Length: 125
Image 1: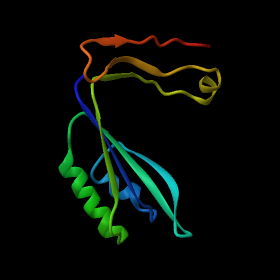
Image 2: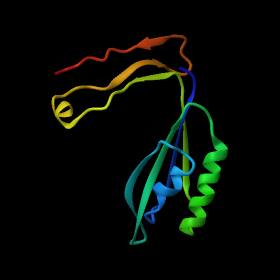
Image 3: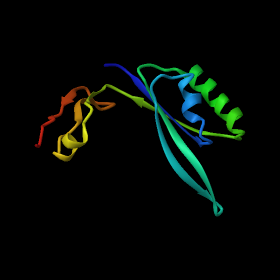
Image 4: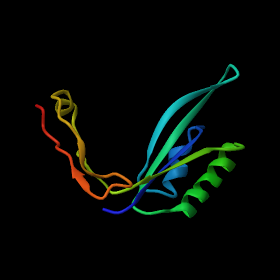
């Protein structure tokens, strides 16, 4: 697996973020939060988008629309480069999660290293 990107957009949430983001990306995660500044509380969210390749134009257009629709002055954008990470992932139901099943990394290439080191992922149930 090659490079991947994780884009995280931190912004005010006026209740319309899912609708806005869905216009640009079919898959994303939205985590609601509360921010505090000088005693004021605001309802915010982090929108996380994971992509196999760079997509700065779509992210820029999404941020533009968020700024306009939320009447915001700014958002915070973080970009994480995912380098040679292969995930062993599966969805778990509540019963499985409570049994102690593990999701883990199946291989990692650490930047600057010359080898990929397999890791062991075991079912501890």
